[in-house]
Structures are given as structure tokens and as C-alpha cells.
Picture 1 (cartoon, rainbow, N blue to C red):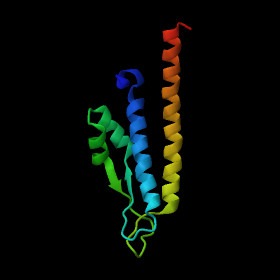
Picture 2: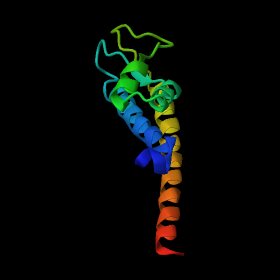
Picture 3: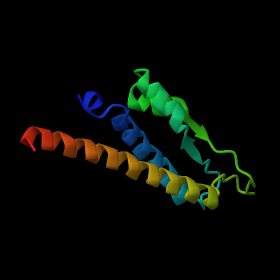
Picture 4: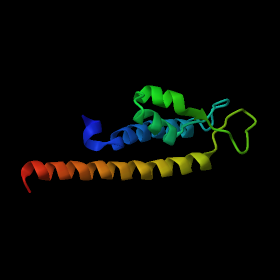
Length: 115
């Protein structure tokens, strides 16, 4: 039902949330030797969701390891500037999607009240 009311924005919000989790895991493991930074190809994941793939399958299919610009000696591929930029961009997009959904809920609420 959420898809019929919110369209693709419900799936986008779920994917943005999952991507935020991956990025925060990258940041948390910035000092872990051998840790490989990962990210979701958001556009590919959203396309997979719109084609009927479940959330977990779409995320698994589109999760990729980051290729570092400057590899570290301990094998860790987290680059804080890259992660912070990705985090900020994703947070802004998450808020925009949430704002759209909130507007849709407000519209439906007004329609139900007869305003």
C-alpha cells in the first residue's frame, strides 16, 4: 500500500537509510586494519526496487567496495573526506525524500478531514 500512496519515494527512503548505515560503518571502521569501505549504487538499487526486487536483494546486488584514491599501508580503504561527503549528500537527499513523504501525508490528512 505504501508504494501506491508514496510511489517510489518509500523505496528511496528505505535505500537512503540503508546507505546511511553503510557509510556510518565505514566511518566507524576508519582505523580498522584491512577494513574495506562499501557503498550502495543508489541509482541501480532504486532501479532494481522499481523492477520488483526486494529491499535486501536490491541492496546486496548493488553494494560495491570503494576504490581508494590513496590506499593505506594497512589495507583499510576508508577515506574520511569521501565518507563525509557521501554522508552529507545522502543526508540531504534523505531529508528531501522525507519532506516529500511528509507533504503527501499532510495532503492525505487534509483530504480525509475535508479541509
